Every structure is written in C-alpha cells, then in structure tokens.
Length: 95
Picture 1 (cartoon, one colour):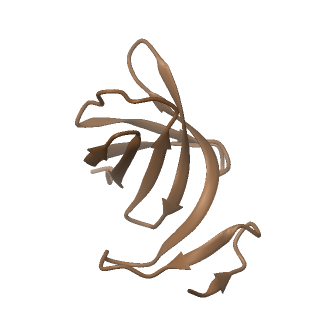
Picture 2 (tube, one colour; picture 1 turned 45 degrees about the vertical axis):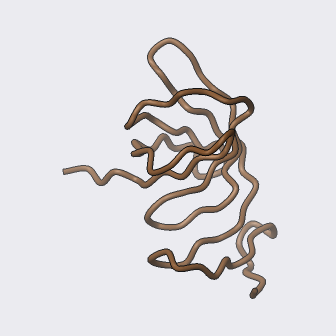
C-alpha cells in the first residue's frame, strides 16, 4: 500500500474495484425521511464509498449520504451491499 497525502489520513487501497479507493475516517450521516443515522466513511473513491454504520439497520436502495469532511456535501447514493454494520455504496450521477 502507498501513503497518499490527502487530509493526512488516507492510504491507497488496492483492490479489484474500478478506480482507486482511499482509506479514510470521515464522519457522515445517512439521511432518511424521518431520521439521520450516524456512520463513518472508511474508504472513498470517485465511484463510491465503504461505510461503517453506528448500528445495524435496513437501508433503502437509494438514500442521501452527508459527508462532513468532504466539502460538507450531500451525495445521492445507491446501496451495493450490506453486511452487518458495514455497507458499500455507489455515487449516483445527476442526469
């Protein structure tokens, strides 16, 4: 693995995924209709992210993800997988 100078906390993750994925620890929130679920973004790429949830929950196929350390931006994401309190999402592109 190679160290990357990105907010002094990222490490390049080699995997079979498309594109580079960086290990990070960024606070985030999943925004649902009637609640916000605290989570942490554990890895990040241009295409998506891996998140660690504060508790086990059922998630819808699409939802908004607010990443506090990423320009205070909300992303529309699509759930790709969910195992226990870990999930993978892809960023939805605006049409």
